[in-house]
Image (cartoon, rainbow, N blue to C red; front, side, top):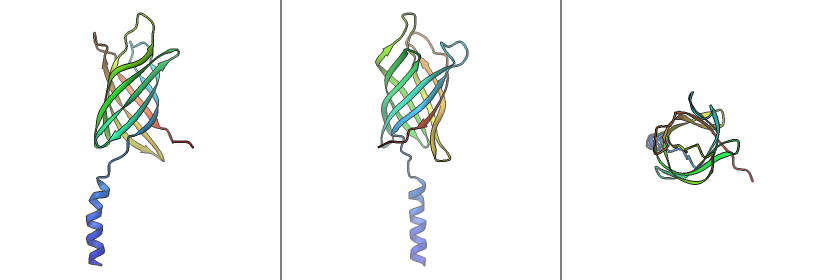
Length: 143
């Protein structure tokens, strides 16, 4: 009995510190406060996690206007801190500028659904962007 108790006490901290896997496809919406181009956009993240480091791409769209951006980030507990670094592909109106976003997204579970939510801010290189929030659900891989 003592051996079992010792094993349980030893294994408990290992299980408690197990890190969540942020890798995968996350889909949902990005909102922008009043004064932005639009209040709601389609938003997706394609993330790969290696240890505490995250890399991937983001996709933002409204109608035919869209951008695909490289991103990088790091984990801090149940929060992933992401920064877009480079525009890979896009289409926009000539009078628009893309916003390179930074987001602090917290992972939580709603039933069996994994969700990422949190605030974002950004900069076009010339000026600050009007901030907002991101709401995503993890896609279940299909065979």
